[in-house]
Image 1: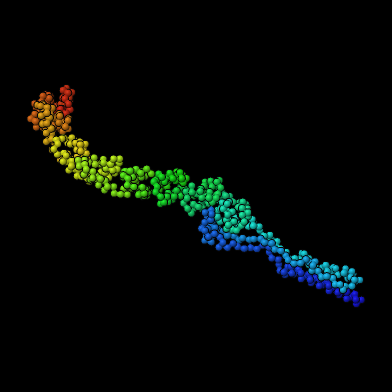
Image 2: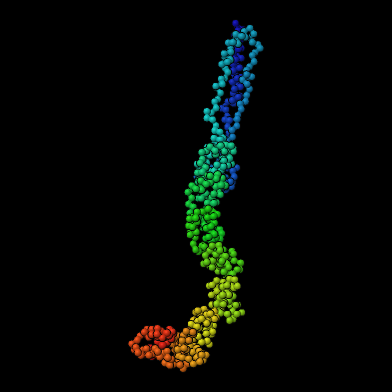
Length: 520
């Protein structure tokens, strides 16, 4: 009996030792703590990002490399790498204690059978192990998709740009980034509209430049077309601002600027016209002056003016611009003085023609040529000197000075008004009388009026200076007889009689009428 009790105690002791050994092994496997998560997290340092001011798609970034957005663009997300953990330890079977060799063989079966339930119940059950979290860790693609939607909420993106930013700024793999861009639900055409509206708020871009920028973001062709047609940009205001900027950067005329805005920059005609009209005349003149300074190489004034006009400036702008590069008035005066020193008998118009001729002469403007010719010589006294010593009527004197010597009308008038025309008529009457022998009073008077353009009074006095009397002329006698027979006749009636019945010329009738009624 005592031996049986000792065997039972020995079996219980061995069972308790086995249970303690298994518990120790289990604690060794689990470390006495909850299992560590199989996922580790880490952040991408801002210092690892690009420090440039723009990304490859033209969007500005802040000093830390974060991508600027329309709102609060965060740009940097958490990068999380998944790793797998492994449990360490020995098999439960190897922890079991070996059975004692001192156990009596005869009693081992009953004791062994009675102790097995106890031994079995002492094993830890698999359900007692710590359970893992019930919420699975999001995949990288899911994280990239969430970040893509977050970015799109704050800023516009093209499909390829979103992939680039997710990959380069947010730390996702290319596959995850592409998955996010493909599945984020963005309307890329509307994103192009957002891009145009955003860019127009930062820079003054022409439609052509805006389109080029969209293509470089890049947006697809149909997205670019949609964005250009459906944006909220005030292109009329952009055209005005663009035109003003163009004037500040280069030299334009209104025609070259307008053509460029339509043909090269793709502005609408109406917007271009409004932009051109918004530029003042003084601004255009300044542009013409800049053009003249850039293109003057010593050419004739008129040649320079023609060059300036050829690019679209008007004649006034061209003249002002050409004059800005030199004192052409003084240059013209110097040229006129030199010409007269070589050609002292040259008249005013000869000098003017020389100065203004763009081919054989100096090519000065009319104003410059007039200024130079006026001041190169005392033309009024020169005209007076030419008038003295010739016996012309007033009208003949004007023609003589203007067409014979090239004086101006004002210069000729000045000289002509200082002549004694009755003396000139008398001289011409004697010349005619001597050349044609004795002749009647009316013959001399008619010559002086019709051929020499003296007045009827000057002609009558000139004929009288030759000793001829009007009463001795039979033609005068016919008029005098009609007036004697018709004492109440008017000048018109006498005129009609002499003309209709006698066929006298108008000049003869005028002289007879003057003589008849002056005497009466």
